[in-house]
Image 1 (cartoon, one colour):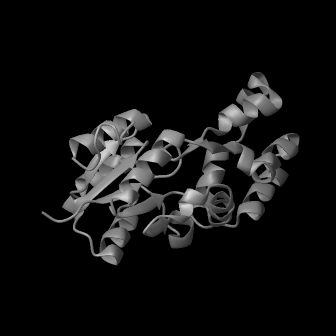
Image 2 (cartoon, rainbow, N blue to C red):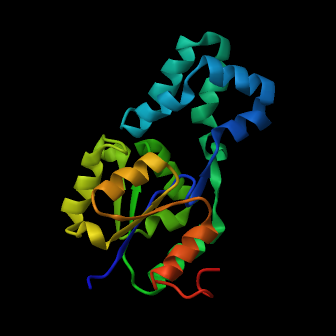
Length: 206
């Protein structure tokens, strides 16, 4: 049986990604609800994940909505406060797999400049065997092509890939390509799956 390769999403798998929580703390829940109802900040972020310039995209959106200009600019200016903290249990699982020489790839929707900032903050992001970052590839999940790029570039058979992601549509696409998949709903569930796959022991998965 070929060796399994682990494929990890990053946001909400290794690093918490809850922009609404940041804005709740920064401007209050009521103002945050108004902002997010009037400005599609997640659509703006999708453009960044697709490779558009981080600052230019955020600041253009801010100019388009002058009522919310300073709040929108926070998406760029306070980004490291938005993206985090690390999910420490998930990081421990990653390190336990690496200690066994199990290859680990990243497959993530992440803008170029935000990813560069994240790598500086979270050193474990430097430890993947291979990286498949949407901003650099200019294509985002769940588009089938980004999965195909990983398969072709790594030379890995789909049934050897074990992939976890917190978004059902991303997991569904991987599953449709023959990957082994796990919908991430917390690090303990992921750890239990790794035990089931006999990649970690119960003690290592804690």
